[in-house]
Image (cartoon, rainbow, N blue to C red; front, side, top):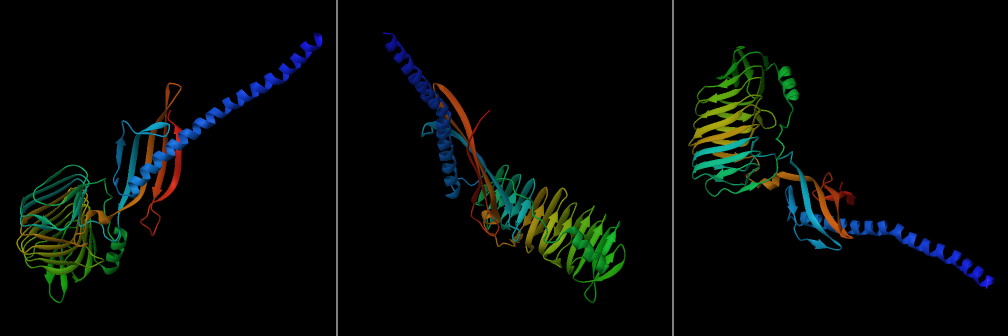
Length: 367
């Protein structure tokens, strides 16, 4: 009897620890198994979202909420898409406004454009050869195609102000602290009234802390006008202006205002102040790009605006450089709901338009 008891005790000493080790092993593996399930669910959510981007079903920043999206061992609650875009450097926008793009009148022909704020186009027989995009609200009459998209970067000039200033200083066409008025001078010269100086046609006229004004009927010259600290005004009819340097016609850190009939104006005009306004009537043609940091306003009857891009669609001028995807999903374990998130980043490499995965984390707990 005593031997039997000893044998049983020995067997228990061997079996019990073995059972305990097996149970402990399963307990230790349970979190790993759960994590694998979370990871699989998170991977499914990210792959689903990436497919939406690659097939162009999702093209702008948006949060998509789901009420009953059950997959694998859980459910997807929401997917957030964060798009980062930029304008192509070689195209920019035909018309750009930071806060308000407004067109009023009749028989006005427009190219394409974008406003980071509100879009207002009203009148009779106003047409556009391209799309007008906006970020705020749109009040548009007629059949102009519009599209609401995310905020876009403001276009920039093909040359910096420092480069333009250096060129003007070298040419003797830099003026500081004075208003100037331009007149047509004989022998392809431009009379700069203020400093009272004649300069060649085709010059950069850079005025620091001063206003630039053209008010002569029939003024016809090739110039690049820069006004910092003030504004640029054009007030008269039958004026012809062409850009002197890389398509840049006017830049002002303040306002730009153009009023007249039968004008022919070409080039890039950029106003960093409160407004850029163009008022014209039949026979008035602007060909180029109009960029305003705040208000861009077009008024008139019979004005024609021809964009540099020829009125291409707004989407043709925007490049998606990055898409960040954030997924939110849940699993129910032992009557408790655990929520996790996953994230991935797609980027467009240089010299390419195809998005590539650069970051991938399908699962991390949500605290």
